[in-house]
Each structure stands twice: as C-alpha cells, then as structure tokens.
Length: 265
Image (cartoon, rainbow, N blue to C red):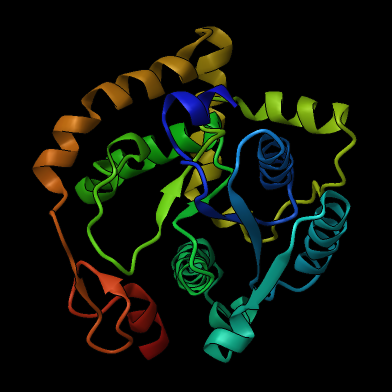
C-alpha cells in the first residue's frame, strides 16, 4: 500500500495488531495488510472486541471470524464482560446517550492493553477519510484541544505502555472502501450499531456529506489542511511524556484514566 510505504507506517519485521470489528473498513484493512505481508516482512495478529451489544455484536463477530479465517489471520477476542465485569448494554442502561463515549474509552483501553500483551509495536485501525474528517469537526466543536492536536503523522512516543496507532485507510472515502470490499467479495457485516442514533458523529457525517455533494473535494481538503497544521499543534499541546493511572497503571494524561473513572461510576 502506497500510504504505508510513503508514511513509513510499518517497518520491516514489526509486529502489527489489527483492530477488527467485522465491518467493511477493518476487514478491508486486514485484507490489504495480508496482501502486503506477502511482499513485505512483518508479523500480524487481529484483535476483536466484543462490547456486549445485544442483537448486534453477534453478527459482526461472526463476519469477523469468518473473513479472518479465510485470510489465515490469527485473532484474539476480548470482551467487556471479561475485562470489566459488565457488557456495554449494562454500562449504559437507562443512559444510552453516553453509549458511544463509554464504548470508545473502554474499547481503546482493551485494544492498547491487548496489543501490548501481544508484543505488538503498532495498532492498526480501519479509520477512513470520513471518520477522520468527522473527528476533526467534533473535536473542534467540543473545544477538545488535546484530541484535536493528536495526529498519526506527527505521533510522539509519550509512554512505553502506549502502542502507536496507525490508520492506513485515512485517505480513502467510505464509499471507496465499500466498493473495494464488495469487489473483492469480503464477508463483512453492514448492520448499524443500535446506539449510533445517539452519536454526534452521525450528525457531523451528514453535514460533511452535504458539503461534499455541493462542493466536491471538501473531505479531501479538510484532512489535507488539518495535516498541514498538525506539526505545530502537536508541538504546542502534546507533552513529551505522560504518567500512568494511579489505579490501573495504564497510561493517562490525568491522575486517573477515563476507564477507571467510568468503572468508579
């Protein structure tokens, strides 16, 4: 993949974890990395997170296991129930509006911890161009300067316990990935998470779609402009190192990480 080569995302003989959900993006990424592996020496394993979402997660898990099996990629399944003693459904019962925020924090926590346990030097995710643009707008609207200043191209190694994230699909539109997955007959699940209706991301996504329709290349231009200012943002707002959570010992910029704050509640 040109992006991996030009951005030097994966070095020879590295060990890469791939976060797989069972959807088109993550399985397309797994497929492409498997193709690359045939020509470029590196190790790869997949991590699947079972959040415990009734009526939804079982379908995506089946798709993930089926396609990874066909690709010959070893995978590991980690669940919220095993890691935190509760499913996501239990965490957000009677408070569905917080589902995406809660899920994101806990999922990232498990992915980082498992990737580190597997001795992986990179954690690869299937974020596409639409995802990246939505995050840019959302972080700006929330005034979240720290998250707004983080970027793949200007990553700093701020903790030995933090596995570096890479996003090889960040320059590709969601619709392009759909076409690729269908053309290559990948077995992916296209159902939508039942908590998606509460997410701010959906509203921002619809706004960007309208802008792209009336002003083509808006999505490309937004990410391109963002990448140009990332070095300055990263230097100004991202520290050279961070500490660890006083409760669980995982990396955090605060005394107590968000995972532990959620569990305390």
